[in-house]
Image 1 (cartoon, rainbow, N blue to C red):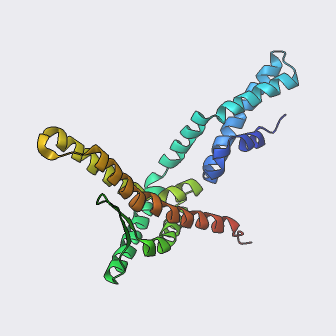
Image 2 (cartoon, helix red, strand yellow):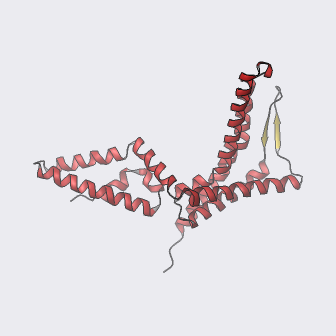
Image 3 (spheres, rainbow, N blue to C red):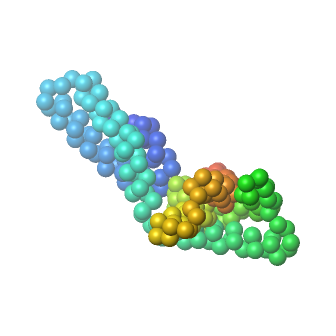
Length: 227
């Protein structure tokens, strides 16, 4: 009998970032189904090799992009509040606290001005401490049973919130421009400003936050269980 569990783990790469309990349950369920299908194929007169190839075909379907996206969605929704939302809010609060402390200490962000009046704000000092915030959120997520995927996702709450706020602001401005003809909506200017805001307050902060959470995931995986 083929080792279906091993084959599934090798082929369905997304399982490597899923919590161990979830992965074991899912692999056990799939392997059981494949064993039943394999025996059915043999009973229908197929050779061992043909039945094995049909089983591999089913595994390839499980490893398809749509199937893996569904797995990620299910993983993120399991224990979302404890493993993603709460650690994410802690990450957000820590980042805001560090940012407020830097402002209070008189350490302003670096600002790049452009000729059209737009600017790019780069809080470089805050970027240096954001890995600690990402690691803290990942640590809390792990303590609440979160796997690598949940822990990394929790670190992205700050960029997600900032990006959502900017997006809502642009949509609100566009709606206002449709209602008030004299609002003076300038798509060219809005798109450039939105891109700069998103870069400075969401995309760039996401990098150190993710690095911090990935470091926590790596370090925790290197720890040997106590004997």
